[in-house]
Image (tube, rainbow, N blue to C red):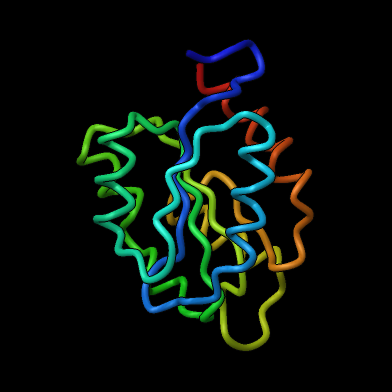
Length: 143
């Protein structure tokens, strides 16, 4: 049961691929729970299929993917298409962390991942209140 603030919406979180740097996503999960969201925390070393299956099984409104290895471009490629194929065309996709190796202007990094189908893309220094504010706005728009 959701209230007008979209509290209690189900969100799936985890680290994609070989990544085990779990502290950041755990802090975000804690903050989201404090806001009333239902969190399905998949933990480290999660595959795209595990994200999709968990989202489908729980009727999640968003998938929040963390990646700190710098290989996100390989690890998340095709995720939006797989969500669409699974009947989840409206699910929000968020991506955050150390998303590339090397030097690239942040605007270009963000553009690259949005082109892959992510609704929001965050650098490793994003402040949690911003993520929550964006999520609340996006959930309202998605209704």
